Length: 488
Image (cartoon, rainbow, N blue to C red; front, side):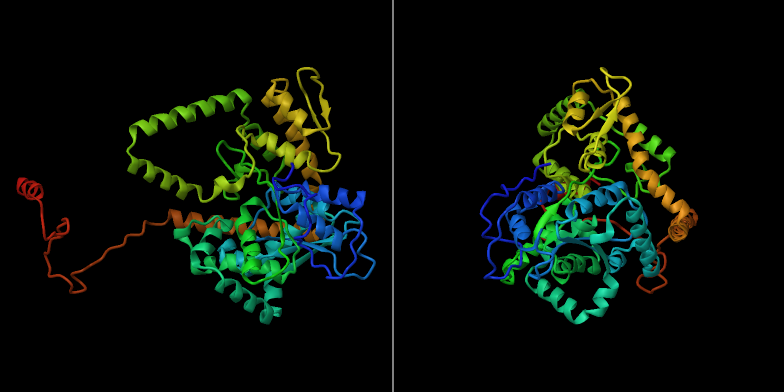
């Protein structure tokens, strides 16, 4: 998918690369152009391609052996939180491999955000469990095909503790340059609503912004859901007079498998394919998944327009504002998960585009009206067009996706069945899940909690008192209020 920003051929006077002031300009080569286009294909948006081009010129291909400085550093952070869905597993592996392909002279740094998971109350706030889950997720990436030769994993707890004298002054400097309102806008990165934030969770965006500079990242390669805090890092560069800003390369967020799900949810097992899912799980989830046709989407749009017109006629302005406010509260930033217009919002097509056909030279085999035995597609656009034209039915599309997903996941299943280290980690993570489920069930099955304020026992009121609920008195009651009160 082409990035939404200006062309990479724009002037590269503003750059994300930390070059030497007097370094001679290098010639832009076809290999560099290939690197640029391959890396850009990772993102739904890049800010900016011109800066990324300059980064490749100053640090990329051909710089690894000339002693002119470090390679291009890309970064992403992840919270070890128990389960890994297919976007975090397979999709992330594909993107990392694109960014660090042989000769690109790039390193991908994963920030294992164990302390951040603790702040976000993951795994019941147990840091030891969080660390085990982090080790498990790394094993998943190994099995999913991520090339680890240009990847490094850095644990937040170790790095921050070991370099506290560097990290915490940086966090404080970020904090003093922004007001609380600006920081709260970033809290969607945790999927949290503003009113439910703890003090630790307000600290979270400040630390994540600081991570970019602490890790010396040239490129922030995270999801669109992290865009606000990544932009905060660029704003910090302006506020602190830093010359070079990090490039923001935001990848697409996959839809949930159910209707109306703007993103996958780890709390809803049927909203996504997870890396430990069995063949039967994949079959069930994809078979039941939302898969609207062109006609379905047009019908849905028409119904929404009619509903909107009906509400605008019947609702008062105050009720409309109240409803919109409630929608915003429930949405918690989900509508901003996607930067490109998509009226269809078909999760089956989404998986085919971004999981199955995302790798270079990938193909997709699916039965259609012209070839019931199966046609091999080389381009996603042709798959989508045949589906929209009715040549591929929803059932045919789902069947082909089930087969393709199981083929992708089989090496992961084999790894965790045959590798003793991986098997042990998986069993521990599964036990954590069972413990969490048992604790939740015990809490739900127990007697309901009753909260009672005994004002008599506290000598606040005398015995046999009565509680009367009444409106607050006013110094200037209206005649109508007086009449209504007398009528009662």
